[in-house]
Length: 132
Image (tube, rainbow, N blue to C red):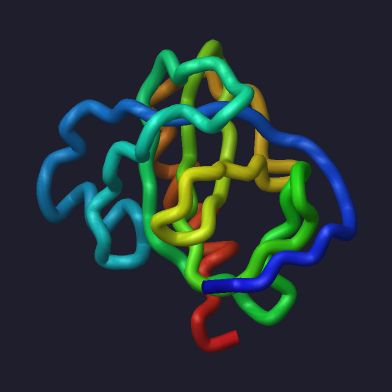
């Protein structure tokens, strides 16, 4: 598993539930060949998600991913992009862990929930850097 440093802070929010994303087209939208999946239960201390989400396993580059709660996280992670109450939020967790962390700067208004796949694909494209 990855290491975590407790330096830094920033801003993002919320979690899970996903309608059927549908086969190969959904996998292509993630940019990683993995079909988006609904995530596990809502992060501790946050409200349950009211909208859809997409999840993909990633390995960030050498700088890791900055989170609000614990600073930089590195190693094998799961990235989840969530839509609730007109906002999109990007969170990460150590792969197969229980705790979710808000990606610093990873929340923004999103008028159309249909754009969730595109936002998730961009987040995966930016953060998944297994080659460094």
